Structure formats: C-alpha cells, structure tokens
Length: 337
Ligand SMILES: Nc1ccn([C@@H]2O[C@H](COP(=O)(O)O)[C@@H](O)[C@H]2O)c(=O)n1
Ligand SMILES: O=P(O)(O)OC[C@H](O)CO
Image 1 (cartoon, rainbow, N blue to C red):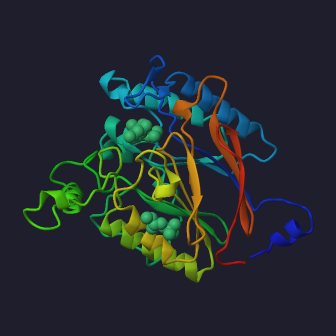
Image 2: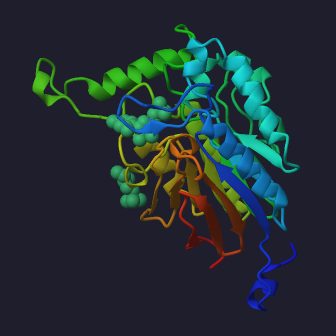
C-alpha cells in the first residue's frame, strides 16, 4: 500500500480520506415541542438542518467519500400521524443532494416506525455496500443489521446493530425477542431467590436502548480478528453508545460491557461513533478507543446545527464539528504508532 503519511510529515496534510457524520435528524412535520424530559425538539427545523449539512458537505473542496448517518432519521410521531413513509421519503430526498455514499445505521425511531422486514427492503438498508471477507460468514438465521466496509486500504468501518437485542421491531416469536426478554429478566432478577432487595440495578435496560446479541458479537469478533491480522484501523458505527462516560442521561447499550470486552480484545479498534444521546458526549477509554457521541440534529435550535466532517490520517482522526459539535483531534494509540 502506498504510504501517504509521508506526505503528511512533509507538511502536505492531505488526509487519506474524509467522511461526514450526522445523528438523530428525527424529522417530523410538526411544531417544536418539549420531549417528556423537557428538552425542546425542533421537528421541522431538523429537515432544514439536514439540508444545510448536505449542502455544506457538497460544497467542500473535498466532498466526503461517504457519510455515516447514525440513525433516528425520522421521529416516532410519524407513526401516529400515519406519515412514516412520507417522512422517510423526504429525508431520503435530502441525501440525494450529495454525490458521496451514505451508510445508514438503524436507531430506535426506525423501529418505532417500521418493521425490520420493511427496513431491509428500504433505502436505509446499505448493507449491500459491504466489502465481503471470504470465510467470514454469518449464521443462516442471522438477521441483525451489521456489515463492514473498507473505504481505504488498512481502514475498516463496522456498522453494528444495537437493537439486535430488543423488543422493538421483532415479532414476539423471534429468537432474539425471546433472548431479549431472557437478558432483561436475568439482569434484573434477584441475586438470591426471595431477596427482592438484592436486585442488580441496570438502569440502561429500557426500551429506547437495546443490545448486541451473541451471534453478532461473535461475528464482530471475527471481523476484528481479521482486521488485527491485516493491521487495519477500525471505526465502529452504531446508534447507542457503549461507554458510560460517552453519554449523559441513560443512553447506554443493554450489554455495553460485553460489547466493550469484545472491542478491547482487539488492538485495531480506534473509535466508536454513536448518536442517540442528543446532548452529545466524548471519552477516550482505557484502551485508547475514542468514543464519540454526536449531538442530535433534532435538539439543535434554528440557526444552529449538529454534524461533522472527519479527516482520517495514518495516526489520527480530525473531527471538524459544525454547530453544536465540538471539533477535536484524536490520536490513535493502537497499531501503526
Ligand atoms: N432519563 C432520560 C433518558 C433519556 N433522555 C434523552 O432522550 C433521548 C433519547 O430518546 P429518543 O426517544 O429520542 O431516542 C436522548 O437525547 C436522551 O438524552 C433524557 O433526557 N433523560
Ligand atoms: O474506560 P474503560 O476502558 O476502563 O471501560 C470502562 C468500563 O468497562 C465501563 O464500565
């Protein structure tokens, strides 16, 4: 592979590649209103913000090679208003204003609006853009929405499904629905039978969060093993944060510690990017992984915004935030140093 980092050290700071990132557009054709926790949600302004983000990416000297859309592209209220398909059509039209590719993540609001079988057939399914790796197969019954792609030699992005374990979007007889019930029951059950005070307290086990099932974790482990062997750097993209310090309220994957354990077994992982927590957050964990939680477009007042352009280099990523998103430079401490 050509080592372009040479040009960086020579003062010509050309990134290897550039991508856009945006989360929680949560569009609905309804007036601004507070949510049940009191934060204002700007349902109509959100579409304008999305347009502005796409216009800015398109006009940049280097148009991003792709955009990570981190889920909740439309709001749950569309279901009640019987507007789910129209709202989806409107936001997808916005994405067509840009030449680069889009990689879509699924959040809880996709699952409030649509069944998984609908999403699979929709333009929100970007899994066909997977760069397959021979010998790494999914089980036949696997229907989690996860895939990986390599936008540049020695870099890989893995989209994971943090509602694989969830009561949302699945039929009650689906094995993962049953596994979800089992997971929640087990995690919340009394440690000693009959001792109701000894319940393990797992605040994150609520409907708007979800988790990653065993099969998907084992698939993820295989991809990351391959990436380690190839000396790749890996960015994971999903909807729900997995580090307690990368969220503010209670936006944490059900089995966040199991997911973190898988990532921590691999030196290739440099970053985990999520949405869901509209306040945004950031931390670097004990293994050097940069956990970036994007501010939500939906909670961005008029004349602000929340999106970013990220430049990727050999040993760092530089995130240029717009609106409520803070810019930051993040060095990689894993392989390649
Ligand atoms: N106790 C809480 C829990 C969550 N939030 C906020 O809700 C947002 C996620 O909910 P969605 O329905 O939009 O997915 C997120 O921004 C949390 O900060 C809260 O404020 N308080
Ligand atoms: O920051 P880390 O890498 O020690 O991970 C934190 C814990 O696993 C979360 O409870």
